Structure formats: structure tokens, C-alpha cells
Image (tube, rainbow, N blue to C red; front, side, top):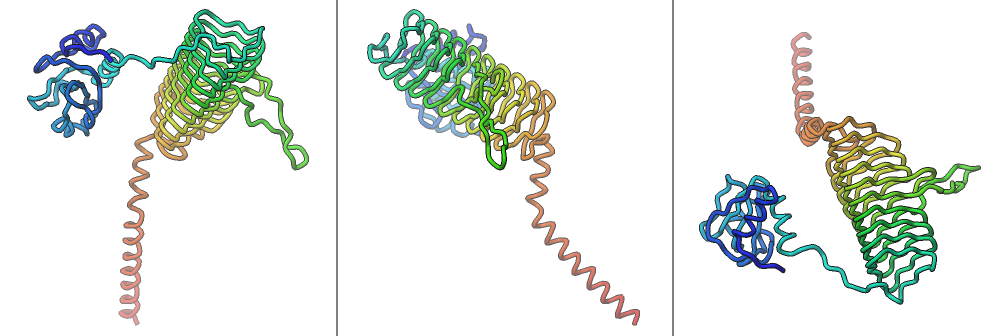
Length: 353
């Protein structure tokens, strides 16, 4: 962990484009923490205004926040327009990225003699690498990983424990895959035959682009024919499932528990929030945002914001939700009106007789 003065952190943030300015005492900082858990010697941040009351209670030495939020005099402030981006860089500066154990090329790894391993390998014992595999330079592979026949892994990749790369699948450069995830397992491909299901051979593969990060316990099917793709820069949370033949564009963000069925085409910079899903054989345009637990059941135009099941325009979905919440009240009012109408009818019948 690095220690530096707030003025130096401010300088580095400004150099990186955050236009930060220091307000208050220039203190020594050695870590980053949340508003609630930060202590003296740590810097915290405020990005969401709903947590602004926590600034008054924080024990941090400094807070990274926007220009329009006050801070107690006992706390220094680093002011900038993008506190979330600035604190991300502060974490990198003060804590750095994860440091991996160094195994070199372990003698306890099982590596087929036909496999081609790049320079500076960091491959643990208990790793199994099959025939005709190609692994690039500077790759770290944790215990329990399996890389199948003919698979290709680029340079600077990290496979955490028990990751499985099936045969003939490909990873680009700087790919990170967290524990328990599987790339290229068979998709759900069966043909009905006389009341039973006949398996369709899954002869395609899965291709993962550069700079993709995949969370724990994810599963990306290989294609029946052709390939399943996750393009460069896309990030997955935990327990994300991608069906066979689906194409996920670049720089997407899929939060945990997301599922996309087979043969879907997902554009670039699409966000699927936690628990969201999409049916197969649809096209989702670029820059679409889908809210948590929503289900996309048809084609979506670019830049749409969707919510609900089936997913619809977010504002319309919110209006519908409000209407449903008022439904019991409206039912009660209708019943009362029915009683009043019935009473008026009885009075009219009585008067006319």
C-alpha cells in the first residue's frame, strides 16, 4: 500500500484528466475506504447525493466529491466533476491491482508436450493443458484450471481457480476469468425425435475478445455451428449465462445473474442490470440499458432504456407499476360507486312505482 500527500494525489488526478483541486489541510493518505468504514489516514468519496449525510459522520481524512457538496472543516476535500472515476484511479494509485502468487511453470502442472507456452509463464500445480494449446506471454493460471485441445489463449491473461476452457475456444489478450467459469461448454441443442430428444452435436466454438473480464461461475456456450462471441472490453459479473451462437458486442456491462438465450445479437455498450435476461433470436441495439430483473422479449432500437417483464420503455413501465400499486384502491372505489349506483336505481324504481 502506498502513502502520499493529498496534494500529490490531487496532482496525479489532474494529470489524468479529472481537474481536481485540494480544499483544506494537505494530509498524508495511505488507503481508500467507504464513507462508513474509513479511518484517519484514508480517503473516501461521495458520488451519489443520497449518501451526502454520511459525509458529516465519516472519520476519513479526506473526501473526493463534487464542487457543490459541503464537508466538515475537520475533513479535507478533493473536488472534481467525476468523483467515481477519480476514486477509481485513487484505488489504483494507493492499492494497486491484485498481486498473484508466482509459481513460474510448476512441475506439478500437466502440460501436453505439443502445447506452446509463451514467455514468463505463471502456471500453478494442478493445471491441465491439453494437446495443441497455445498460451501467450505473461499468463497466470491458477490451480484446477483445464485448457482443452486446440484452445488459444492470448497474452497477459489470468484464469482463476477451476476455470475451464473447452477445446478450440479462443481468448484474446488481457482477458480475466474468475473462479469456476466455463467457456465453450455445449449449448442446449436437441432435436425432437419420436417423443424423445436427440442431441445436436455442438461443433462450433466460443471466442472471447481482448480486455474482457468474466466473473465467477459464468457459462458461455459454444455455438452449434460457427461461434459464440463476447467482443473486446465487455465485462460480466457473477453467474452470467450466454447461450450458443449469441454475439455480445464490445464494451457491454452485464451485472450478476444475467442470462441471454441463444442466437441473440447484442450491440455495443449495452448494459443488462442484475437479474435481467433476453430471449434468443433477437437484436438489441447499441447503448441500450435494461433494468434489473427485466426480460427483453423482442428487438430493441439503439439507445433505449427498458424496464419490466416484458421489458418496455422505462417511463411507461414505471407508470404501469404505479397504476398496479393503486389497483386495490381503485377496486374499492369502483365497488363503492357500484353500491351508490344501485342505491340510486332503487330510489328511482321506488319513485316511479
